[in-house]
Length: 270
Image (cartoon, rainbow, N blue to C red; front, side):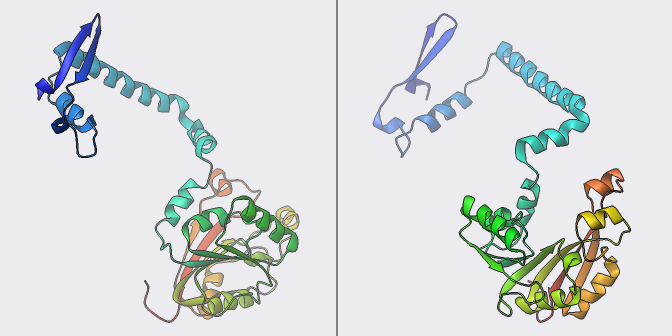
């Protein structure tokens, strides 16, 4: 194989050239695989091996030193570089792409780019016209062609029966006068065996927060909302508290959050 290449020395530089003939090239005409194979069989001089090992060790030490120096600022740097939603978008990839998802109470459409990029169809429902217009501008600006924006009451959803594979309601129910009616509507639009995901505030007594957010309810007791969800036709309901900035730092400014998930009665989990 060494006969296929010529090495010319010029000072400290070695110039490699290939003896070009038809039999020497890969099927696509590229010499790269042959060159890499040849280089991989060439023994490195001891001095070069030692130098390479020193460089590898030095860079490993620099990486460890960087993380030791940066410490608590790492989250800030990562957010500056990649934003705050990439992990959520990665987890969404675990779910089937062919699903139709309802974002109930979409607000300004914060979740729409992530949902649109993965699922076949997204139905975004919002009762407030101004919020819906913000969501519409977001969808138009980011060319979210598989998003349908609908204005409607959350207790009378503008959607057909059994038309979605996942219904999402993130921080919505505490704004609804009758949460049970909203839960019943979610059960109506979700296909048998399909899923619901609800994020809500835990019960709290923070008057300033309640008034600032113009809430209708002072949050919910997780076990009570779990019972309500079961009562509207969902099964295998699970609940867990979410880690937020408030819960992580012990801040009294906002209530804790929890997430409920469940499956609509009707068939086995898929």
